[in-house]
Length: 336
Ligand code: NAP
Figure (spheres, rainbow, N blue to C red):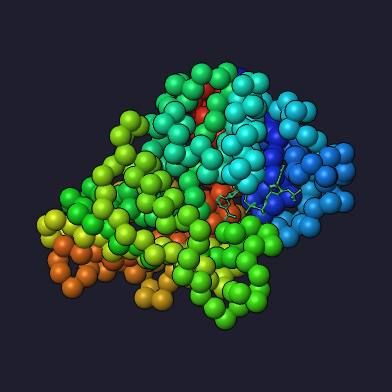
């Protein structure tokens, strides 16, 4: 008889927007148990429920998690760690944990482009998980992409099969929760669109090439990106135009998403209506899906346009780290 193990997990950055989403998702997931929480130093020893400004819409805070005392990095012993730290802190702390044999699943950008670190979306580049075998530490670090990159990479991946891509043009509309809490000041964002997010365009270009390339060689793609912060609370929209060398068909594009859904049922939701997908109407607070819409030909038969949209805190962050943790455990036969 197979006995299912319940895996103990520590969460770093537990009070932030991503950390709260990790807690909400794991509290409802009987494969895992949250045993340790870390936030910034001034909170050490305090009860999580007393310090967190719980803003997570998926569920109320689990009383057992609320009762956990916040600890320091050195006290973390759980074998699996989800990191939702600012990148500068992640850069310092995540390798220390890996050296102590703990496995870190990170939302931070610190090691995403490291040659020995997987930048993983299991449905897209699962084989890249093998990169951990090149890490010298007994604990491993696995990262998930930037919250806009993930929707671009997922939207693009199936479409690379239908022709030779010569250029990709991308425009993003990114929600305020993508900047964490409290994020952008309300005076700056309400009724406004900000056509810049520091370092975001560079991350989107480089990460997309790594995810869609081979383990040792990024894919060569010519990409141009414009990013925007918009007054939407949850959900990043990525509009893209794909310029192929030769004519392609809309039917072939639709077919690619149908084929991908045979392997990963329900992963892509392909919207037929002209006015969908919309963040407010189409995403849920535990949405692990990629919403595809506005699939259409451009003004030449070699140009395809589409939108990829999804929950930046779930598939774009917390849910992605949890999926990577599960892929890692599956790879090691973790439930046996
Ligand atoms: P956030 O809301 O600002 O939360 C940051 C968290 O880090 C808080 O729990 C904070 O604790 C903790 N922290 C800050 N300084 C610390 C220190 N010196 N030591 C220990 N903990 C410290 O940010 P977020 O949006 O959750 O993002 C977290 C990470 O995920 C970032 O690297 C971000 O780039 C990445 N990410 C975010 C998204 C998204 O959609 N938001 C998507 C993908 C990736 P205190 O409350 O105690 O200060």
